[in-house]
Length: 253
Image (cartoon, rainbow, N blue to C red; front, side):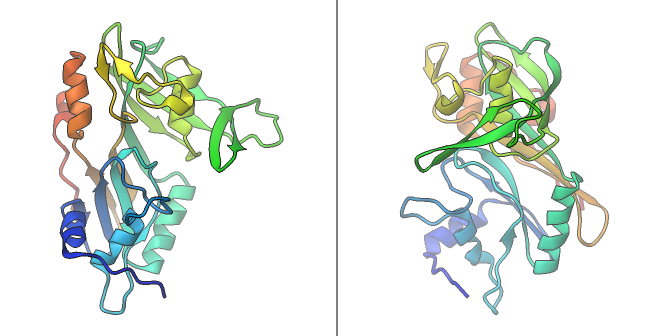
């Protein structure tokens, strides 16, 4: 069994990310710039940092899903193999509700609220993989469905709430680009790197809340506050943050 030795500073750091924990589940607030798994730079990934929560047997929580390196927000782990299997099945059967916040440009989508039901296919360029929209009957087509809602907007940019109904790689990024409103800070899919004269520090996509069936029964909702870099850009653009998202909702117990 692979083990990773963490420094006291790394242990202290990852413990500050805890949003919710119980005997079965551990939910963390992943910061931007931290790879969920399989990073190529010589720092520990979130998956490796989970050794901070390992049992005496060496068994650590398991990631149930992943977030892109520059995406921030709620990420779910299971403390046991049965818990991981339960949550994995819940994800596959679309019983896990994911809600994201994103800054898109230019301005609000038209219409301001709607859905994108466009198939995607994966392509590779060297070591990089990316997604493209495609016809439903393409041999590599993967059905993909997303919903969006504009929360606040200006002629320059908009804050939108996003809800993926499927879990394809880069789905929200490609779907928003496909309707002419790519997510800011996403050069791979045409996102603006400067908005209103202000630099966009990274991909402006935040996993704001996750509602999921719990292995022990019932349902839980965990939310993560909007990170400082995103809140600062929103303020600089004069975009309001609705009160429902200004502070994280308490995790259900």
